[in-house]
Length: 452
Ligand code: PHE
Image (tube, rainbow, N blue to C red; front, side, top):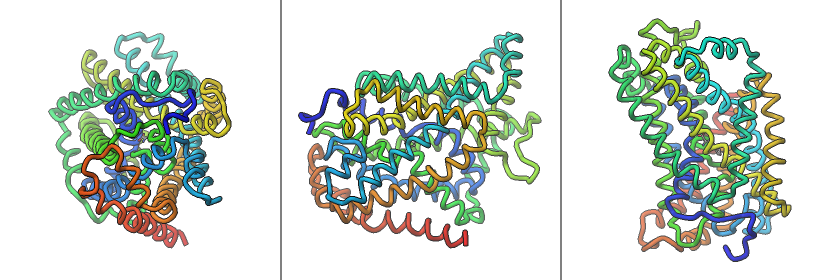
């Protein structure tokens, strides 16, 4: 299909580049901002177990499905569904994905903006420039959010304008490995501090009494959010793949990379919370529950950094928020690429105008959110926690029953050696047809039943 692609679309340069870009999409605020808080609330290791079940039994098969749809058609989510069936309904599923990406990016940019602003705040704090620190703290929060989300969006647009291999691939290839190294160094340090043990215990000891329907619902939503599934981001990334790539393997690498970073981030953040507590910083709300992820990452952590000696604090505080913004950037790129690829393919736009027009529109929503951050929860619930598993369910049904798993397997055969003898070949169709839809369905139905 590569031959009929127009120049505005592009292709990945290398296999590693693609895996890192897809892993870069997956690894983001979901792993470092959302995941640790959910683990802490959802019964520590008990939540992790439920989460892993969601990732392996639902996430991984759906990821392979999305990449396959993308490569088979070489198109954006809407175009891909159009190309594979005559159904009038499924292109709307693609469109729902584009919309989810649009809305998720609008609040994601605001949170990503915080990571950037904290990067600067930490630096100013530790180099002791009181003037700048004061200037920052007296700045109106809404205005600050607006400035930093704009900066973040502009960076995202710039990279998208650079295209697939020169923009996305080049940036993520450098940022991803760096992220992992920094996380591990920080854990090594935090683990040695007072209080860390209590955090480790909370993280690693399963408390199954906490695993309610709500928690299962959150775990499913978290799995989709963190793996970038259910909205066609990986259909889009798959559409830039060549026929030599091994899709099941790529999906396995990306899933494992994402889960590892989440588990590693938890290993840093949760012990760090208790280190903060040991130095007198409040980490529990009045109700006795742990404070929200947002408070933990953007309030408790900086306070913890400030108890450290200037050099260590600067190194940790500065790098932590820098790292978080890099992780966020490789995800915002993929979020914007979805609507951009849609208007390039379906409406014949130029990449550059598409990136600026769509990025600008999304930024307008981000600016509204900047001044009313209560909206984040609301948009997050509708478009990620509900929207993504819903999209994933429909994608699984589409591949399972409309396009058919046989066609999908035939597509995956290209690039995969000895494919028909593999474990994946035998079992994946059952996962897509039955296990994933049933598990997502159960979580939805139980939640709806509980609502009424
Ligand atoms: N997976 C990203 C994260 O964990 C968020 C994301 C969701 C990116 C959906 C693309 C698509 O932060």
